[in-house]
Length: 186
Image (cartoon, rainbow, N blue to C red):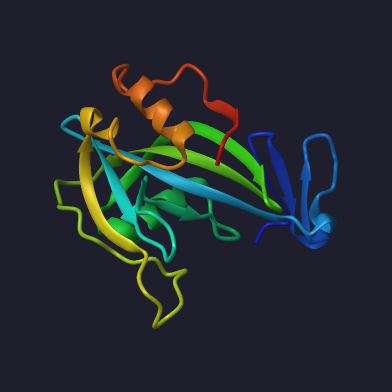
């Protein structure tokens, strides 16, 4: 893993110091706050977006873009490609970053990166797995499906802020006017 990794000036990870520093130099590593980067993939086919439905114990089902946690030493494009393949069986190429958002909640600071992906070939999406689920535990991934923009309006897609952005930007050919969407509702 490199000594220092930077994501567009938003944060810098320094492996030898056990944490990260914000752009202003404020150290959060000693705070005990859980920090992570989640990368999600927007894959579009014939006006529909690929989503994955999750079901966790004691929670209502919800939909998300395919994605997951960035692993140490992994780039954002590598993470987007890996997560898409793990959860849907599809292969795609990274086309760019659509959105970056972050939230601080309950001792967690998460940066969400939503990447635009271009499918390779015309394979069918199949329900994959989530390697973060402990062996023998109930799987959380329940369904993978192409969802039209019209259908997207009526489903519970998390985070809600990304759902709003997807609905706004779908008609513009996925060319958002502002990539950084700020602090969100998580």
